[in-house]
Length: 390
Image (tube, rainbow, N blue to C red; front, side, top):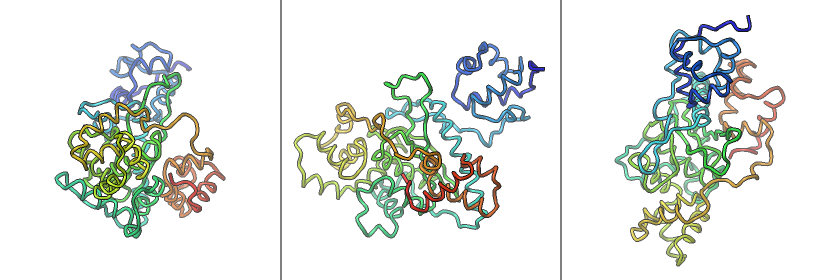
């Protein structure tokens, strides 16, 4: 009985493995079987035992029941835009399994959030609409003004990421910070993750995701980069900002740079502080506008023709790679605090309200929030005092 084979659908097995980003050899190693056996499940020449199926489901983060479906669930498939990111030179780079899982999780949450918002009879989210032919500087100004809202007349330059996030959520944009876990045994000296963010347009629950591995100043740039994608209604996963980016990525980089560092303001700031060393200038601009070194270099190069090449020189010479240092982090690492940081106050509040209104039951609430019992009360308290919004 223990070795009873389960009649899985080979097409679904192949689909789930391809979606995950894991190779057949990696899966076989985890399950402690020969790679030929996993290949047989993919092509229909063999079936897994119950134990092997459960192991496969755990590895791919799927329900075992998925593999019994009669057809591939194409409506939940990752499109090509979510399987790779464009490098600055225009070539593509395959996303790692943790990066793909983060996108899958965000899309799963978005589908339910959209349904709940629609049930609430709220209007569609009105996001500014732009085209790639629009001038990036004007678009950046438009997006910054829209996000800042009533604060637009005040000094809205140089805000922390947490402030921008709170403002975007006030506009009903779900801003998520997916947590990427480094696989055990991986080389910590290597930069494993290339994904910096992604956008998921939707009429009722538009999502922008900013990968939490970036340190806060770099997150602000990614946030506006992804908002730029939403204004052109584009699904996308994005790499680090770069002056060498091609097409839409370069346009979104320029929009984000203009939103965070307006050209006229930047020129005035630099004219008042004439550093002889260009790298010190980049550092000072990044510090003043609370953004990343890359974003500062892109903005300077766009504003000053004489600064051509400063991005490449900055990228090569400065040791700080817009990545967090080991250690540190947020003081509160309880599960409710982590969930509010990851999903955002707006998403957690939406799920908690739906549970309070009995539009989702306790099992659904646990499934979506991954919180149990008193933890939901703690999450609600954190939202009320705005303790975690970045």
